[in-house]
Figure 1 (cartoon, rainbow, N blue to C red):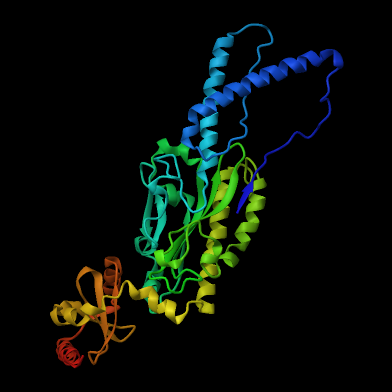
Figure 2 (figure 1 turned 180 degrees about the vertical axis):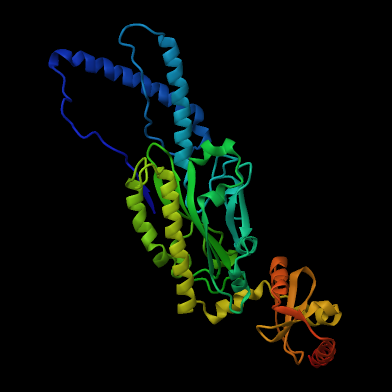
Length: 407
């Protein structure tokens, strides 16, 4: 959904007709406009290859007219052509910047490059790198970097949805100042990353996915505000980008207020509602607040309504469950890698490459999950996982051997 800011219009329409005796002046002006438009079309043809898919119907051109007969027309004409070329180039790129389902790459000045889309179903946009290239991460990495306690929710059984809001400043904090002008073509005011979930209508998908929800503004002469959904669904989900809000149950309802408010925000121009406040700063603050409310609403809806089916819960872990290694890892685990899970009252066995196997005290295998290293470190640091006392460790090893032999 996008909202266009049409800007201000002249308040009066009087005085538009000239006396018949001066109609020749209108004819001269028509010829001058025709010549300028011809120059504009030639310049557009020169830069068209930058964004061949974009439609640019018009641009605004300031013209200085010397009424005294003095001044160099050559210098003014050169300035006008140089200005017009840059105006057409920037306007063309701005028109092409907003494409549903893709991010604008500041490095390539395009949303058609390989950097513009998520590399995997679990990837979310985490911000721009120093050289303007979009960077992608898993939502677990973003939560871990912030020390967000909701990280554990991603590894519950069943896992819970997490929605993290990111501000305009967070998205651009690493970007070098030289990309400031290109940034205006697709300006991210705020965003929300959501994960992980099985796409709605695709319960047979082999893995869960994540989603990036952005409020972005494109262009400067006639800004467009819009909500962009960026995500790569699993191959076997039957879905293809660009995604609709229906990809996640409850997302449309959570964004309803945001979509309604964008219309009024698009009509605001130049400044915020408070004296001296820049319009862009107000937009960014307002959109961040709206997305933060949407994130809370979305998390609440999915927890309360329990929208994920049992099948989806089981499938969401399938790709991460290295169950075949459970007893092998348990037999070879060092003493310090066999721990008690104080919350679940199970025994956690740490294997290689992030594998964690959970057993009952009686040595029966419960489940296996691949955890990021930061999750493992966090649970040990928080003392949720503690080493088993020697006597209990020996008893557990004996019971695991017995259970393995019974298989």
